[in-house]
Figure: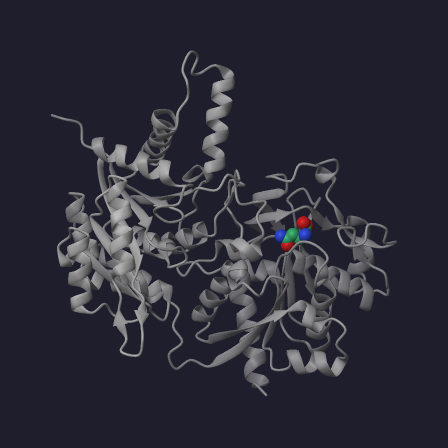
Length: 543
Ligand code: GLN
């Protein structure tokens, strides 16, 4: 009997990026997982960076961190939130990783005597890598999302590798395209899709399905026209118009029969839905209908691009859902609070049911964040600090409660006489910037009687990290004696992981709990923060 072929779904972007290819990919994985099909996503990004760690969040969106220390594209956040699974870094391929591997192999002599070429060496390496991911994870299906769009010079060789893969294995190609509406009559235009189909076919790839992104539902004549140009039956053109929440996309695609069509196209033997899995997911989808709204102010430095804080935004939504409330995020550029007098600060922050300071790097906006934290403490507004937000909570407390007026982090003032936050011992002497922070999953031990311990309901937890600086242990005593509780440390006690106010609800962690928040398992710290914010908001209705 011939060996069964491996099964892959390749998702390509045609036309333009930023239309939600990551959400379509995540939704495909989710739909098939309802069939108990073992499926995971792998992402290729064509840039020559080795990973996302050195990219600017204002340009590229948030840098996502996995348990295994990998710094990856923010699409991994979407994958993990949909799949409720911890992914590993080998599922992230970049142009940088591929080229660096091929060159180091060449130096070792792996290709002695040969001239190394994009085809077959690089395309061969790619196929080996995706097939290894398929086998190592013992999958029924591997979904491969190709970053960028068809026609980009950066991804041409990768698409060629997928074409070659399809000669030997079962590969279904899904192209995600955009259908714009032009003019007052609201006509849906198909020409851009027609042209992009032609470029895809020039690469030797015939798509098996087209997913069309549009604002409103796809009109029947538009579907027919697109189908004709893509050599497809109209049923293979799947409408994915905008919805209220991204978490509704798997259900919406299932209503169009995309799940059954994929199961059939890949000839998968698992072809019945496990209703329990489907219902569990449906019950966890955040919705705002008829729910009371509270305002949460997020004071950061990358707020111009909300994607810089994508996981924070999602974690707030998951936490709102389990608290039966709806959250409106008030994105505040921290620089706006700098130089403002107290009345102005009050005007900006009044009506916040909770205040959150997320992670960040560099000096810009620090004073504004400190103002917001002081406001939260003095007005007893629930506060959640994440990474930089914890470091600043310690600095604000040191300055305004413990009287250490010049307290600072050596990241922002290397010569402060009170370095409440300083460089971790393990970071001293580290010069290279890529992949050198304290990264990935780390355990922490939570203190008896702390908010942290009560929130997590256990004394030992793990959360993901991405930072170089830490709470300076020389100040533990001075600050705890004034009422700053150390809520948790690393198991050896060496690094402070949680700090807390004792007069009102304020908690901060050196970790990034938002990275593990999912609709089906909301982050405990966000859940607790929103529970307190809900109470506060109900007692102090919006002005
Ligand atoms: N800049 C700080 C550090 O490196 C905080 C980092 C963060 O918020 N992720 O320690």
